[in-house]
Amino acid sequence: MHLSGRCSNPRPLVDAVLILTDETERAKRLKLLRKLEKLEGKPMPERNQLRLPQGAIQAAAVDVMRKARQPLPITEMHRRVEKRLKREVSYDTVCSFLTVAAKRH
Image (cartoon, rainbow, N blue to C red; front, side, top):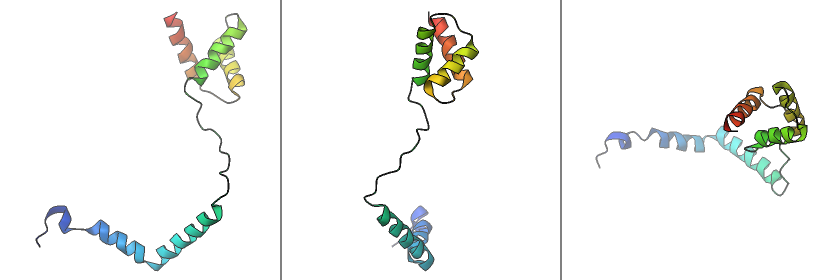
């Protein structure tokens, strides 16, 4: 059988076999499997949401404007949006939304 090109050099397959047969790697895999077995059936821990849902900052800004019923400085808008969302948000995101909204209306 004549092999050429990529098939003539099956190095990734050889590496995979060596890893699977290596005793230290086998011990690591068994240790990991034992940890996973202990976790089986246990509920997942609660994780903090890393990102806000799409449109959350815009909705909060509109809500803040609706409740204010008067023009607000951008710094005050930003502060109230953060207070409403109970987390820090980018000042630039709030400014950008207000700029785009002002151009549309």
